[in-house]
Image 1 (cartoon, one colour):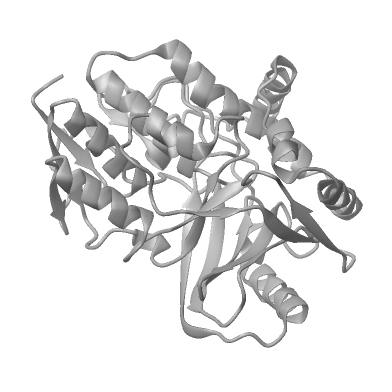
Image 2 (cartoon, rainbow, N blue to C red):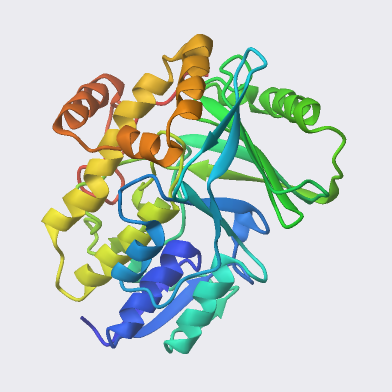
Length: 365
């Protein structure tokens, strides 16, 4: 490993990679064209998925080499809404997810920034990375899914509510999270993206009917893109390392990426040090992505009644255990994913800098 490593991008995956490299003894510089961190996620709630593997996400956080535990809010209860007006309360003995804030005081970004500075990382905010930067963490190159969010302050009690109605959000879902008076409402879709504004309006109306006249103060809108392009390695043809969404790493079912992004940081940091482990990469990153692709295929074919039955089933089982079952990386699911990849593969060569990256065929306008 060279004595000086430069990282392009100061988001979650970039800062996490920088922390791990610095703790290995490297001189690390992070270049972020934004100032203050958080970027397009400023102030909003995201999730650190705890239904991906039986190992708790916070335990894995430390196993990957990160010191301490970031500020999180564990979630054990939620309300799922279906297309027929049904409300399904779900619960789990252990947290099925951890909520994290992005951007600003008390956020995961602020925590990682403090850890980076304490580890001796040099942060250059408001600066583009120089040519030849060794680690790329600059976010998605293309949009394989899009979310439209509204972040605001509210008098809502702590709330986790998710709407599964393909007539409102085709190929996606809508969500409203509120913790300690900070709320995030959003709609996420991977197909029929032109309907996103109308889906946003309809989903908002449904949540207002369900929750009543809650306050909406200091609102600001934002959006995010989801990139899903499973690569065969995190090292590009240009010799540089790619992490997080810059590597096309995402869970394709619900568009969750934070836990997988942390895994890319650990894998890439080892790779920079000359300790790339292809078996570990296959086990903790590639196989979960393939499983999520098979789930995405099924999700887009479930229909209104299918979602209703799934929500009803979720209300009768331990919710985290159900998520663990859905995310199981069995050989059968990997085989199904390869069939889906063959059917959905984009024509032409758009693999980008990473070898063997798969892309879904773009939707026709």
